[in-house]
Length: 78
Image (cartoon, rainbow, N blue to C red; front, side):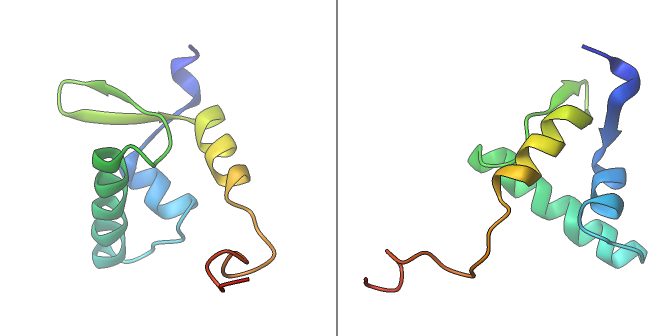
């Protein structure tokens, strides 16, 4: 694994979610923590209390969520 191609939760909040202010960054870091707990977020590496996201895994996670509609046909009852 290329450790130079890793991102912290803070950097993910800024680059992936567009967080700019400290409040936005903290909110998005909390969202990432929820995703980690649920097992639905991007794969990550943990060293002590530091969470690192491999850039390749982030790219794959984002690509898998690209869609052209806001909800599925199943959710719409069709």
